[in-house]
Image (cartoon, rainbow, N blue to C red):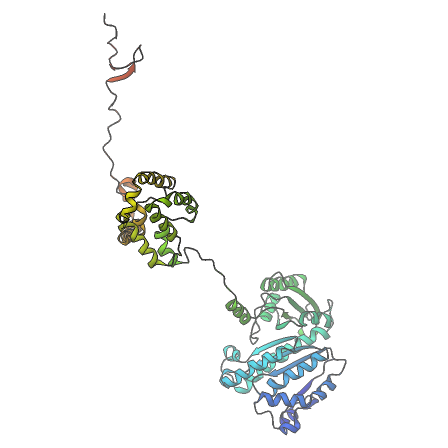
Length: 504
């Protein structure tokens, strides 16, 4: 059976409730006047009477529903203490809680969030009913009607889960099935809806998944789904069962484990009722939070690194693989001042790309200070014979590495004007291309323009100038023929078939 227990710090609220099982929380602490919207007072009041609550639960209780309004004192502070006690007794605990209206103040909203986080530690599953959605759905209700709507949704949720266990059916769903679905599953989504008519199966399952006051009504990614189908005088058909299960699998994903049952309720008459409980998935807020905190590792590519792209024209002619090829050249140049000059150049060129000022200075010296090789005049005169040898040795690696031409190496790296001109040319070409495309689109929109395009040759549209070509009827065959004589020599003969080499 199902028993109800009401716990409150407010003595007046306890007296007005028709539920027979009542527990006065913190009678000595609050003197029956409520918690004063202070969660700490509600917590201490529950601790004061926790033994009474455990005694009422006893050893035969298998499942406990905790319904509470979050944001105040008693519900926010006492519900986590009761949930903790139920967990110690190994009772399947499901919390059905409501969040405050936005007009109740920011402080109440913060207290509700803190209470929910504390409650999640001790319950197996929890359903959240958002009071703020009442105004979106039902409009400008009176205050009593608004809270009444929230209470109805809360009651429907608890009743729907309880009836799945207690009401027998052809395909029975019992407490073990509910425990499998809701044990330590976290957030849960529960919906129930009844419909009648020819399309009652689709209407019922759509209404159950569109429960308006549940905070999250998307079941995508759910691990477990508990489904109960109830029918009255008009029994459910196999086609209707197929429609309902296919729709749920489509919304939840094929990975969801669907447990379903069927029972009969004569009070439904011709209606078909569908009750769905989905658990084991992340909420939309948790998914957004996980995406924000996800670590992103990106590789540094030329497209994603504009700094590297800036210096790329400067260093593009110096490849790291070319360094080993230059090693024998450096050995041969130990005896000459010129070898030291260019050897130092290649060593400095391997510096990090980001040291632009140093690279600029070095490259300027290569262009402008080539005559400085004459500076060590004494060494130049001492090795006059070896200068010719060094020229031969230095030219050999240049021939082996055509990709590093000596004259063009500094010009590409330091001539900013040429780089600017190339950029301007590219911009100019892109503008011309855009204009051509615009003209083409304008012509295609009109009939005359399309005819002009069809009648005009392609080479004229591309503004290509063709040279005057001789007509095919005109011959360009020479009047002379180049051939070999009998002695193997070369002779030129006129192309006249009536003339013979041997004159009569």
